Amino acid sequence: MIFWKSFYDKYWNFNNQKFVDLLEKARKAKRNKQMHKSGNMNIEITLFESVSKKELWEFINKFSIFVNSWIDVKWALWILIKQIKNPYMKRIVTEMKENINHWISISETMNEYPKVFDSLTTALVWVWEKTWQLWKILAELDQNLLENIELKWRVKWAMIYPMILLWLTLLMVTFMMIFIVPRITESFEKAWSQLPALTQFVVWISNFFMNDYWKMIIWIIWIILVIKMINSTYIWKMMFARMFTKMPIFWYIVKQSNIVFFIKSFTILLDSWVLLLESLKTSSKVVPNLAYKKELIRIKNEVEVWLTISKSLGLNLDYEASVYLNPLFPEEFAYVVSTGEETWSLSDSLKKVWINYNWELKRYIWNLSSMMEPIIIVIVWILVGTIVVAIMLPFFEMWKIAKSL
Image (cartoon, rainbow, N blue to C red; front, top):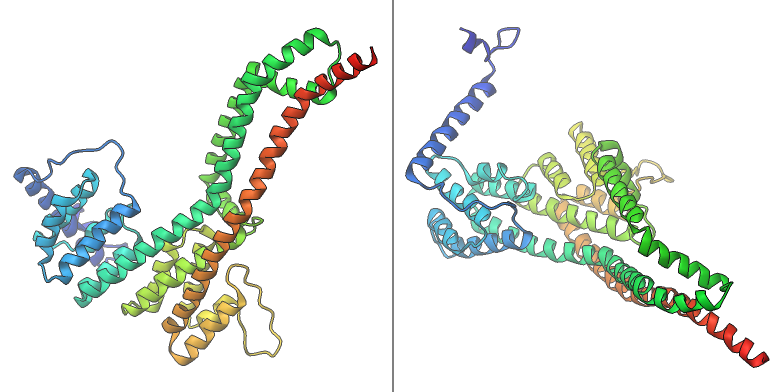
C-alpha cells in the first residue's frame, strides 16, 4: 500500500509520469544486467573520460556515410565500434547498439551523456526518430559540427594567441632576470656605491624573481582559487558573461560568435520541423555565453504567451520613433526577424544573415590577429629594451668617468 501511495499526490490523483519513469528504470536495469551477463560491458576503462569535438564529428560523419549508403543502423554502429579508437566513445556507441535491442532510442542514450552530445545533436537525432529522415539529419549534423569546430577554433585562437605571445615574452624576461641580469650587475654593485635608478629597479625585480618567487606563486594560486570559487556561483558567472560582451577589442567576437551559433542551430531545428518554442529552448543550450542563454530563455517565455520574437528582442514598429535597447542582439537582426515573421520565411531570412555575420566574424578575427602581432612585438621590444638600457647605463657612467680622467 505504501508503494502505491508514491504514485498519488495529496489529492489522490494518479501521477502517470512517475509510473512511466519507474518502468523506464526497470527496463534499463534489465538491459544493463543482460549486457553484464553477455560480457558486452567489458570495455577498456579510461582515467579521463572525454570525447573531443573532432572525434564526435568523425563519428557523425562516418555514421552519415554508412546510413546514406543504405546500411542498417545497427550494422553501421557495429562497424563504427570497430573503427573508433577512443575507449570512452567506443563504450557509448556500444551502448547505443545494445539499447536498440531493448527499444531504447539513440537520442535517449545520447541524453545520458550531455558532455559528449550537445542539445542540438540530441534534438536532431530525436527529430530523425520521429520523422525517419536520418540521412538528412545526419548530413545537417555533419556540416554543422564541422562549421562549429572551425568557428570555435578561430574564436579561441583570436582570444588565446595574444596571451601565448605575452606568456612567451614573460618567460623570456624571467629568464633574463634570473640568469643574465644578476651576473652582469654583480660586478657593477662591487664597483659602484650608487647604481642608476633604472638599473636599481631592474636589479630589484631580478632579486625578487630569484629570492621571493614563492610569494608570486602563492599569489597566482590564490587568484586562481578565488576565480574558481567566484565562477561557481550563478551571479558571478552572469557578471563575467556580461563583462565578456563589453570587453575592449574582443566584445565583437563574443557577441558575433554567439549570434552565429544561435542562428545556425535555430535554423537547422526549424528546417527539421521542430516546434518554435522547442527550437528556441534548444538553441539557448547551444550558445556558449550565459548572458545569451538567459536572453534566449526570456524570449522563449515571452513567445510562449503569444509575443513575437522581434518584439521580445525589443523591436517595436507600432511607433514611428522607437528606442531599441537590447545590448546582445543588434537592431538590424531584430528587423530581419520581424520581416521573416511577417513573410513566414524566418528560417530563410536568418540563413542569409548567418552567411553575412559568419563572414564578418572571420574577417574581424583575421584582422585582429594581424593587428596583434606588431603590438606584441612592440611590447617585447619595450620590455627587452628596458632591461638592456638598465644594463648599459653603468657602462655609460664608467665611460664618462674615464673620459673626465
